[in-house]
Length: 139
Image 1 (spheres, rainbow, N blue to C red):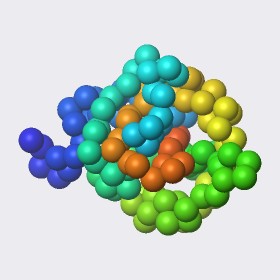
Image 2: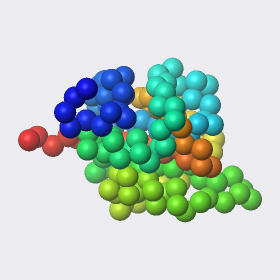
Image 3: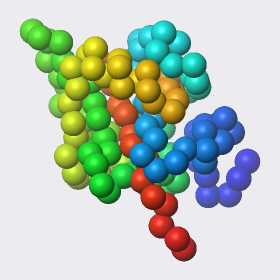
Image 4: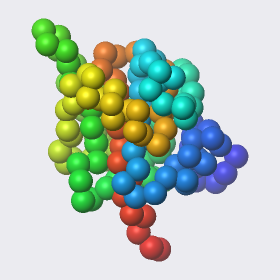
């Protein structure tokens, strides 16, 4: 256990976040996401809601300031999003900027290129989000 780091952040997730460079992306997926079909680096955070894990990661992870750093999956035609999911993610990240919405298969393509996928215990529909890492400021 480390001081100042949430116990929700596993050692593997902490290592993954540290290994990422600026511009790298990480997916925090819902429990239904086919992570192993799209990426070789998959971490598990079963039972942890995505917004809780995002809040735990937010103090450790600088969002990119040169590109839209938060991307969510858009609903399939004829389906709808629960706006509370985006609201919860914004609050967890302390983020008020633009969130890009990607069509399902475009989101899958982006997940293939991501540094890693973290499968959370999130059960709300379209609870998938991609974060793009920025440059960590010098203390």
